[in-house]
Amino acid sequence: MNCGETKDLIQLYLDNELDARSTLSMQQHLDSCSGCSRQLNILLFQDQALKQAARGEIIDSSRVRAGILSAIAQETQAETPHQTTNWLPTHWFKMAAWPRIAAAAAFVLIAAFLALRGGWMPGVNETVYAAVAADHAAHCSADAMMGAVNDPDELRQLIRASAKVDALPDLSAFGYGNPQGRVCKVGDAEFLHLVYYRNSQPPLSLFLRHHGSTLITEQLTALHSGNFNVVSVSQGGVDLLVVSSLTEDQTSSITRALASRLLQ
Amino acid sequence: MFDLNKSGSSVMNKQERLSRQQSFEREAMLHLDALLKAANRIARPRLDAEDVVQETYLRAWKHFDSFEAGTNCRAWLFRIMFNVIKARSGTLAKRIETPIGEEIELENRPSNVLFFDPLKKIEGQEALSAATRLSPEHREVLWLVVVEEFSYREVAEILEAPVGTVMSRLHRARRELRRLLITDSKVVSGVRL
Image (tube, rainbow over all chains, first blue to last red; front, side, top):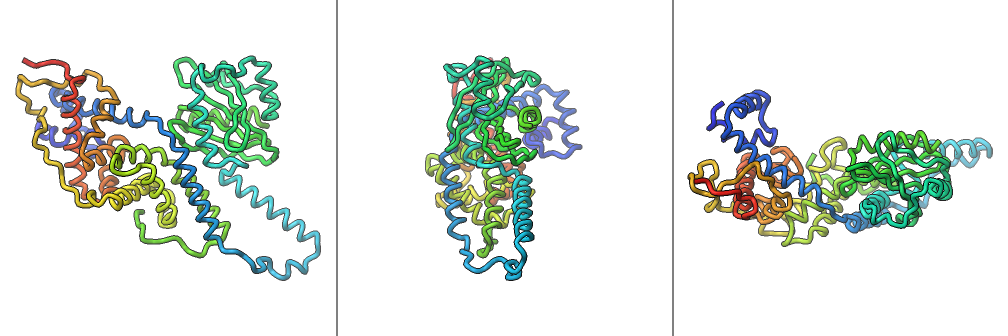
């Protein structure tokens, strides 16, 4: 490949649109031609600057999110036909009491199982994910957590009272420590918010709440909200949400490890 | 994947609707921030970005049955959003390529012009600000390829334009962005004699 051909194809190379053979030819030419290499760097730096700035922008989408979900919920409600007819077969009413009770119990269990397999979490919806991400963003600095509880004994008491969990979550295996805690309101519910710090890394937040149900699921639900990944799990009657700037996989690993240690 | 003509079934029981709603929240709401950021940079100042995104999601919800699970939901949403933008801004439907005219050809620059030092760090905010000053057709294609990392084919589908048009607009957009960055003196490093 020569400089003229490179000039024609440099944009395709930059955008990963070249086939493997042309990519290899291009790389060989770039390795040996400082002029073309310089042209590539100009485009590359420009693209990277734009991409990083655009992706780093923090926007508050909570109002739009709430508006969309509310409009959809209203539409769903309006479109749902009223069921005024008997939806149980007539022989149901002719059955003895105990098979009816057993069948109803089985139905409830199956429904609960299916709901949990689908990632449903008692009382936690899209709005809560956005709200915990926003709360995390608002409390990322030590200044924002001023006045929060940082004494380990007091934190243990706080976590026991708020989430009915005995142990203080230990994230030292992931490099996070010095937790600080506060009780916060997310939507209509109160959560215990624990912020963990790590040298030269953005902090990580845990949101814990006891919801009274003993339903257990190992299903993790991950959502990206703002610049953060939010991963949740509901286990042993406790809702746990982890908010971090780490990747979804890393956040999920931490959530899984915490759930297995804490929420048994 | 992008067939918006099929509408959802009008007869659906409550369980199906709930399941559809959960599926929509899981698949589509995930991309809200990306759409809002793009709308902020592309639709403004002519249109209200939040209104555009809200309408996009309501249209997506209406046609969610036509979306094939497992395909690229983000690209599907972006296509809907560009349809909303087009519908709201009549001039966008009949847009004309911006003449290049004054662009600086760095590749063939004379030896006594200001030159751009690729080793000098470009500040992200400068690039973002300069990108916002591009013409709409350049701004949107640059955003979709560089920020959202869509392929040329996906961008062509989103914008309903031929792939060749996407490529030429992108080339011009990058060149225009570079011109703006150079004329913003902060990234000019010196004079070549």
